[in-house]
Amino acid sequence: IMSETARFTDGHTKLGVVAGDHAAILWPLLCGMAKAKYYLLTSDFIDGREAERIGMVSLCVPPAELMPKAFEVADKLATGAQQAIRWTKRSLNNWLRMAGPIFDQSIALEMLTFMDGDVREGAAAIREKRPPRFPSAL
Image: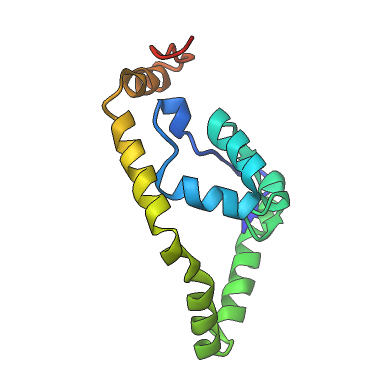
């Protein structure tokens, strides 16, 4: 559940780091490859409405309704059939086991970028609140 006014980004590439670990696996599954590539490569921010539209979040609500809606959903889960909920969640999460090789590769690539000059420049640019000048840029 996300507020309409909330925003998030996966800023890996803005820092000069491979968008590895969870990003390489989850983003395409949640919002499709085209949107995953766009947001992961540009590090653009996503607001609540867009996040709901592309499937990154379940619900988008006005800020004043965020906590009431969260408690409403929590109550549904807490008063539901716990075994069925638990096993359904387990079944839905089983696909993660199949993504192991992709996850391993993306972690390795992400670690390699931490040894690159781009990550130092990306971090410095964010600290100094300026656009990055990546050494690897054309």
